[in-house]
Image (cartoon, rainbow, N blue to C red; front, side, top):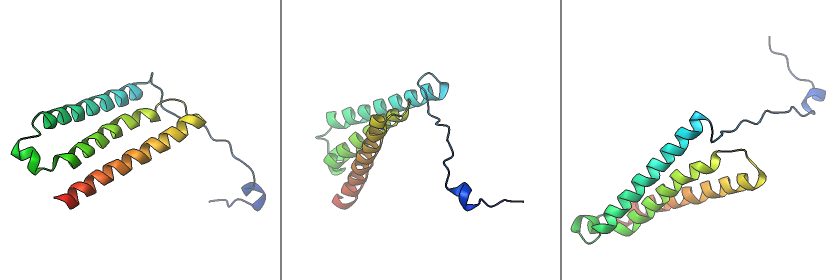
Length: 117
């Protein structure tokens, strides 16, 4: 049977345990490794596209929005690293700002490629 809280019980604060991911944990190491590999793969793709930027295939693919999108995806991989570690006031603001900026860059890159092709 479910017991409903009275109005007196609704007014008190219930302490919460703060859980966060450490760099020293296995999952933290896996997250760092995946973010690093993803960022390196994106940067490798940017290097290949930049090297062959004058070829017809890269020019037909509209390379400027592609570079913006790849740059934003690299930032998305690196943004996940800000979520590891004990949260502080400063790091929480950095996390939210970094996530918002990378999300906006990704969406603008996708929309730019969608409407410019």
